[in-house]
Length: 104
Image (tube, rainbow, N blue to C red):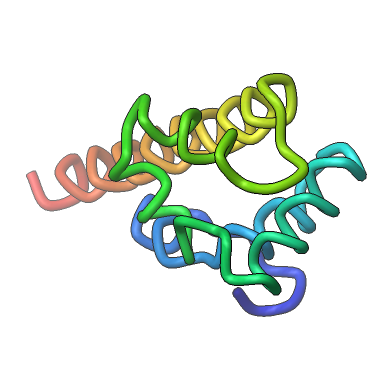
């Protein structure tokens, strides 16, 4: 992700490294530390947000399997990613709807 640039489409969000997203948005120091440790040690089961989203509800379980992560931290990550995905999908849909109106 470019500096000072938030993902504005679902495609941009999906390709964003998950650690970058956690560091960029409001999250607990425990989540940032645990994810940083998991990425550095090779125990993170997802490289980017898309990998996380593709796991669906299994993403919470996969997150809990990482060192230093309990249910509360896993749910914090899930809430963050779910909120960002919803916002990005809505923004993408609104842009597509606007393009349809302009061409119609």
